[in-house]
Image (tube, rainbow, N blue to C red; front, top):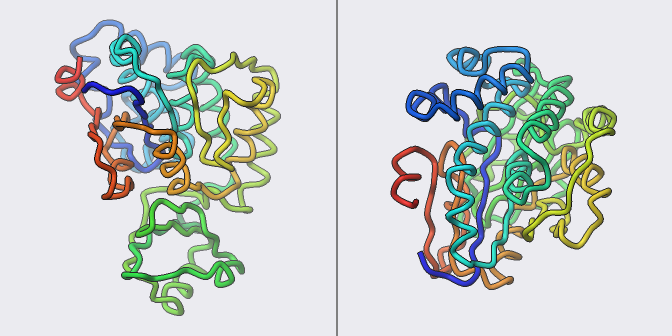
Length: 303
């Protein structure tokens, strides 16, 4: 891949799967050390905990697990990508923003894992799969969604593309909403909390308190936040915590994030994370190359 401007995208919660990291850990000693270090920080055996899909899908476990796996992919790829001489533009979907900040060397691994741990713990206070749900909606052709239909326990959480949005809220209210508003195909998501809605405000306040003593460093590359499309390069490192706090209870403006990156003349995209998801949201009119790095084979093919 030869290009001048390269955008790297990082997946978020919902991309987890039980075998994450096992392939790498079985072959590379530093990966085994990474998982041991992670287990020491988190207070449980990460790979063992991942064996139970029900636990892995809970917020407090899925978020650290996804970040750890993404960090491994990043540490395989970062030097190779940086040596290409490309101008790098980073962005992450929700939790993926932490991987983007890690790629940009804003925090070392241990500190970023602690931040992700605090995020998962804070968000888990409203994590209840019996009470809350999230649905992706594959919109009908030319379907325009009026924001006035939301409220009363149903919220617009993600605007992923012109064809997909995500809603969240109270399970019973969402079922009523589906019946009342046949906007398209409703797909239940593998998450346990009403992310990116006002139901997460208490979580965001708790998160802010937990990370009060974390000291971020200035990012080394452009990092576009999915909240208000703010470039971390253009704000003080002292504002990073506030930006991450607000992101927890604000809709993910992913379609706008992608369009902003394209407007910054991105030639190609790489997606890094457990599963390929974000490349699917890039407009079909984009003519550049799109590469997913999700496993050992794809890492080896790139490096």
